[in-house]
Image (cartoon, rainbow, N blue to C red):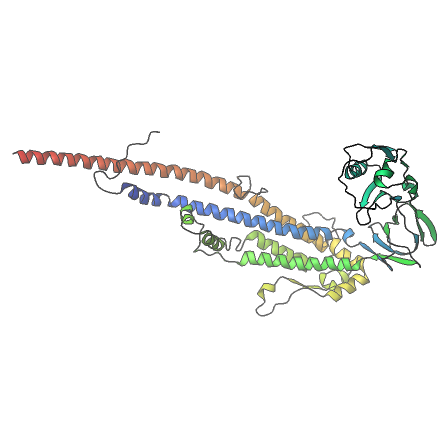
Length: 491
């Protein structure tokens, strides 16, 4: 399209561009308002995404507590950790082990003689030749250095490592495994290993097996670790007397997990209450590009922080999430003994109302001693409180009442997360035009803005045409006036 010729106030003396610019500000008001609504929607989408991340974090914690593995963790305690340490797996059973370590497994080693002077590992000029370690041949050439030869041995993957003791000025060969089977042979018939590295083939000392007695039974081991009944034992030193390793349920770990559940729940309540009770500031709207251009970055940040306030005020999804979680933890678990069917039975209660403490409403408080006593008395009963499942249909109102607290919370959080995802989509872009409710809303906004932009462009063209017509008319009148003045002057 060819732009029409514009007469910018040539006849009238008016600042046509300024007048039309002012008129266009009025024309663009609906566009600016829609832009603000779009920006607010994108901010809200981002806030929902942050909330989904917060809910997912607590969902993972609740998810871990749904399974008995979290409650059945065992701990292994050694009476002398300088001799032996132990770690119990989920398959281990409670019990005690009496262990005596008579010898540790060692590697096969060849220690070379010390050099009388400092050794330059990067110097060339070595005696050329070949040698073998564990059947693998290595060459020393005129371009070789002691450092390059060491590198060749170490990358050969033959189960032997070559190193240099810079403090005592000597080379060493050590097997990467331990025990009697770790021995390695050296063939240095050319003498290059002895001549260049002061390593003598005859000085290789074979490794030895570990010697251990477990519950009266003697064993020889190629390694300084072994597994027995689901327990891993790591030998650290030789003992002069018997060491006892006790394997028991790790009640402290269970206590810590439940404490963490209470603390993270309270953090979530804080976040949900903060988001849904913060009121929006109607005096602060998203800035236009022109407004941003007139402000500093700091001013923009301060303005936008206020404009973003209250984006989740009284949000239905978040308020429903908070109500559901509270209800999940209030009701006891059907089917369990009355003495152990509620959180109160293990020392977890909702905080009571106190004057000025409205922010604490809905939060939990924990009696740690009561929790520890309950776990020590009957850890399986505590486990059932969190892990119990229901076989009832999802539509059955009693189904959730039969579920353990971790199961309930996990399901409620899943529902809340799914509602948010349906509203905002699963992508990471705040401007994504997907099938989510907000994605469809953004699509509609973009279409409406395109339509308004076209109308504004047409209005601007119309204004210029009108002012151009006015300028032409005034110019014509001026010309006619000049002609009449000339005619009257001649008469």
